[in-house]
Amino acid sequence: MSEHGSNRPPGSPMRSDLGKHESVTASRTWWDAAAPEYAAEHGGFLGDDRPGGALVWGPEGWTEAELGLLGPLQGRVVLEIGAGGAQGSRWLASQGARPVALDLSHAMLAHAGSREPAVALVQADAGALPLREGCVDLACSAYGAIPFVADLAGVLGEVARVLRPGGRFVFSVTHPVRWAFPDVPGAAGLVADRPYFDRTPYVERDETGRATYVEHHRTLGDTVRAATAAGLLVVDVVEPEWPARNQQTWGGWSPLRGAVLPGTAIWVCRRPD
Image (cartoon, rainbow, N blue to C red; front, side, top):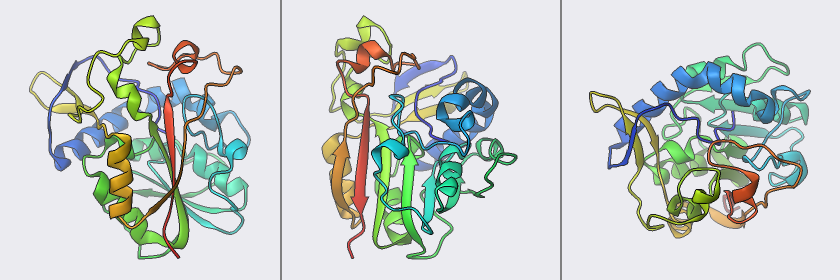
């Protein structure tokens, strides 16, 4: 599943620090509970209605079939991290790749169980990949895992470990500049009201104080430094424009905001040869 777009439950949102374990627990619990509703609302956009699925990079609707950021796929072992309903992995399989769809949420992966083409499904934490070193040719993540993990360096280090030399990791996240703006689709979402440099996570908590939903923010520079520290080369950062064909509003994403602000950043990284 491409976990892009907020579909947040009612709660008490705030900025607050929290640890790695609390972040993982909140994400697993929230996505397990949200899986059926999320699939019903967004599954078609993400590829359920397309033969062979689709790898959609963000709410703008640009697909890997259009952008070609991963490169040749035939015969390649591709790890999709934060795969959700595995629409992306099913598309990869339809292109001759050998995908492995990994997600923290069992309920999200269950959405892929009865769909074709069948792909390998693995429930695991992106920060502790259950794979040996250098066993995958490519890795990808479309709004999956990265926005929801406290330890970005740990995840990127794990991806670098399992990639073969020369392998690519392409991942998309909410464009960091959006952090400074309200997450609403209308005109109010065009006026910055908070510091871009505030890295404090967005957290929703229940009445007991338990974190129920978490998103983490890094600046562009933070991600460059984390990727470099993990031993990855940053090849490109793609900032896709909102296409005229997409008139859909999804959470804080909309054609109005998309015409003015970048919504998605797609990072193209490579493990050195």
